[in-house]
Length: 239
Ligand code: IPE
Ligand code: IPE
Ligand code: MG
Image (cartoon, rainbow, N blue to C red; front, side):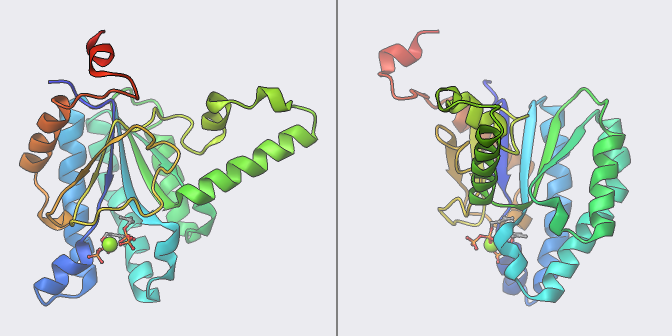
């Protein structure tokens, strides 16, 4: 089966899943964290080279304070608890997003996890934390201006590869497949530049109900898609 080199997942629907069960939204996030662990281990087992999980967006800071605090605490707790799982599965942990906005103790655990897993050679697991595609592109534009001002770059040097290289995600290939759970058909500011030719799968199930069987089904469908990148079918079929 042809696997995506880079799989990205927008883990959505925790709050509504919990509400449907008359629980508080945070109960949904707890369950969501469990699902994330299962999916991470399954992707590592399948030898998917890059997995990115959208865990917290720039806009998620506008949620009620208690929910934001809970999500931050949960992130810190899970990373602490699961470092050994990452080591055991040879997973290298990375992040994209504005880490400066995270509470210092959470930021510290994120950086610690990056460091501890730095020499692992298996799957690269990236958490998008306080991440927004527009913010990422804006930061790239600022860096471009800075480099031109300082005489490090000429207008003619600016091409797509240079832009990609100045994004926070420069260490990642573009995502081949993006999955969003919970039935919403939008990207919500995720990987705006990088998703130019991503296959996108909108899955009806909310994230807390997502199972490895669902992943299997979606990966099988992905392996059967024809990716043409603007060419004709005949051209795309040629190796
Ligand atoms: C995804 O679930 C988790 C985060 C965005 C942090 P939501 O919390 O967005 O759940 P819904 O979409 O409100 O159901
Ligand atoms: C996107 O989900 C962000 C994450 C899954 C982390 P949201 O729930 O924040 O997106 P909207 O508000 O429904 O577009
Ligand atoms: Mg949501």
